[in-house]
Amino acid sequence: MIRRQKVRETSGSAVHPSELKLLNADVVRCFRCPRLVSYREEIGRVRRRAYKGQEYWSRPVPGFGDPAARLLIIGLAPGAHGANRTGRMFTGDRSGDFLYRALYETGYANQPTSASREDGLCLTDAYITAPVRCVPPGNKPSRQEILNCRSYLAREIEILQNVRAVVALGRIGFDAYLSLLQDLGLISSRARFPFAHAATFETHPGGPAVITSYHPSQQNTSTGKLTLDMLRTVFLLARELIEARAAVKPGAAAVETGK
Image (cartoon, rainbow, N blue to C red):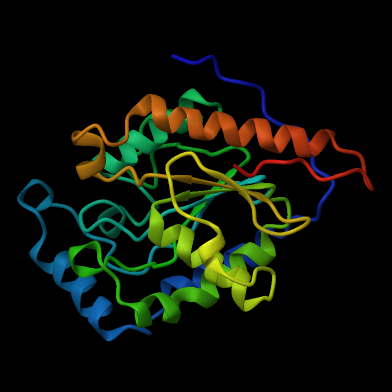
């Protein structure tokens, strides 16, 4: 196991946890996508045999983590019997087990497992979100469904003012983030940023470093496309980039992170 590192104790930027609470309340009440509403509720009615006695969340899943986070993690969407069941990002399935183990071993989580909203898990210096808040059939949201959900991600990024690094778990999360930057006029083209595991980018001056990773889906982890060591390396790299930026004095040149 990699030794857990000490994380930052203070931050100079404003933090607005009350705004996050209001945003998350709006997320949970969302009915923008009829196909996803129908699917999430149907899964909660039918349920997997192993969870027959449990009540499913079956609503949009809000972001989760430290409001003062310097690391923003962007996934894809809730898992059918994971976050759609438990109501918390990457909680209650194998993808979550894999992700939180890596976060624990790199100092971002206080425990290596995530079973329910009441299990005591806390993140320090990290916040997890997704471009789609409802479970999509086949884990494949439509373009319109991603667009319908975009305002929630945009508001989150605006509220989380301490973010210095973004880890995109999978191509869809990466594309969603780049699309927001393009809408804001911060980048001219997404083609300049090809997706590859552990690639790092400076998307625009003054923006957070961006690191791409394969998604910790069961398919990727069971086939060895993504290993625990590979994912740990991504989060250790994120910490290095964050600390390098913190060491740069105001007015100094930006840290070079692009590959």
